[in-house]
Amino acid sequence: MIATTLAEIAAATEGRVVGDEALVVDGPAVVDSRRVVPGCLFVAVPGEHVDGHEFAAAALDGGAVATLATRSVPGPHVLVDDPIAALGRLARWRLATMRESGAPAVVAITGSQGKTSVKDLVAHVLAGQAPTVAPEGSFNNELGVPLTILRTDAATRFLVLEMGARGLGHIAALCRIAPPDVGVVLNVGAAHAGEFGGLDRTAQAKGEIVEALGPDGVAVVNADDPRVAAMRTRTAARVVTFGRAGDVRLVGEVQLTDEGTPRFEARIGDLTLDVTVPQIGEHQAMNALAALAVATSLGIDPTAAVAALAQARAGSPMRMERHVRADGVVVLNDAYNANPESTAAALRALVAVSRGRSIAVLGEMLELGAESRRAHEQVGALAAELGVDHVVAVGDGAAPIADGAGTIGEVAADVETAIAMVSARLEPDTVVLVKASRGVRLERVAEALLRD
Image 1 (cartoon, rainbow, N blue to C red):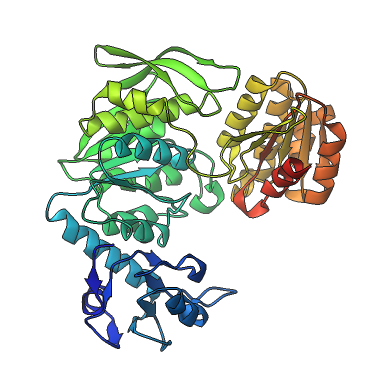
Image 2: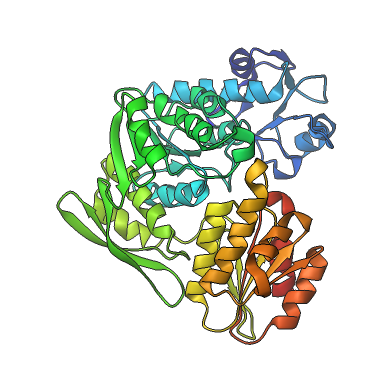
């Protein structure tokens, strides 16, 4: 963060300084005392199980300059009514102050799936052009977006943000903190459908990102998704489409290498480009098209963007991470999150890279509402249809996956049971996919298999 006095922080957050108003914060904002770095601002967030105020002293010992808090804590601090809302106000003020000089350009990305993958691809391409800041992992909510903004400094030229939502108005609120120059909508799918109340309401929420664009902005939308393509009527910005029929479009079929990474042709105007992305799954081709659309909308030479994509390894953990054991067993750790669409893509990737036995270890896909059972059964049926050799559904919530999979499916009551079931079926050249919603923490299966 650009050097900021406590007096300036108090003014931006509508708070009150306790201590020396002239103290300068020149590091990022952090909410975890274990991630404190010298010069940072520690934000004491009260949680259901842990209250950040109890760690203020440890944060100061670690090098924090001051604390943003709702009650008195050791050392200098700024008192506010709500630390999360105050953090958002601070980030909004800091970004607005920086942009008075014209930088950074803000790219905001949303969609039901693929946000983090596309964010990583876009950040990789832009970082090759100028200093770029992007979220760590999936920092995409009212905490993650401000924390990312407050990692910028005077040299930052591109700020890439991922914006998630669990209801109407959430993305609009994030866009008030960080008004985008480029707003990207990838897709509208079943993720969080139970919370939104259906796909149309999901589309309404996701489209808030293009509504936040001004007439000088750019809306990058998926031409292949009818609900997303329709969003072009909801913005005054210039619209750039991607997909099989987009301004940045896929030509022909996607070819997969032996490692499961895509190769394809993309056409931008009269220019045809050979594109490779060293990440697993055919779906990465569409993610790369979205990244190309963003890059070209910002004036970046398409050939330079394609060259950067060819070096774009996965930037966030537990997203189709490929690990090979000494005995030849391959573990695909895609356990960060799951919904019906992303799980279908992962299953197709599993089959594409398998040369021997294929095993899918699948946990519950959360927040699907009334469609949950049917969606889980359909995932199991798809696994059987694709030719997956064996499916292990972990936990009662995932049991309908095994029902849909038929004879190739079985249910493991818990993670330990799943590990035992899979281990008993392993042989050289087996490929194991591990995928579930984040709350299931199914990465424990991948970790155990890799330890073995």
